[in-house]
Each structure stands twice: as C-alpha cells, then as structure tokens.
Image (cartoon, one colour):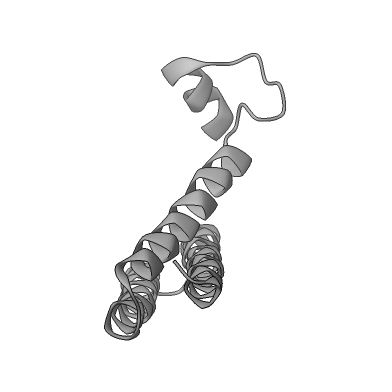
Length: 109
C-alpha cells in the first residue's frame, strides 16, 4: 500500500463520516419536526428519499472511483458516526437510573 492509497482511504473515511452525520442529522431533524408538521407523512417520506438518495449517490461514487479499501473506509466512517450518534442520543447516557422497557416508557411520558 502506497502513501497515496492510504490518504485516499483516510479521505474516504472522512467522506463516510460526513455522510453519516448528514444522514443521521436529517433523521434527527425529521423525527423532531414530524409531530408539528402540516403533512407529517410527506415530510417523513421526503426525508427518507432524500437521505437514502444522497447516501446511495455517495456510496456508488466511492465504489466507482475507488479501491475496495476506500469503500470499506467509507462504510467504517458511516458506521462509526452511527455508533457515536446512537450513544449520544441514548436516554440513559446522562446517568439515568431507568433501564429496560419501563425506562423507555417513562422517558417518553
């Protein structure tokens, strides 16, 4: 592996992480806006189509222009952002005592 290939993989990781942030940020925004939206179904469907379309375009672009290591790096960046975002959005992250299904019901109430 040359230094150039390594930098391409690092760049692909950054692209995947950025895509993951945009994808999950769009999902977060959609979930927060649906309850007050005039047409919540259209908002949810439109957001889904836009997020999936953007992710598919970027992943296809990486596949067509890159090496297999770039694809794996891009997916790893996307996956890492998903793991971090899931941890950050967890209701138990701030030391809440509630756990399990009952805890989620309390959190939603």
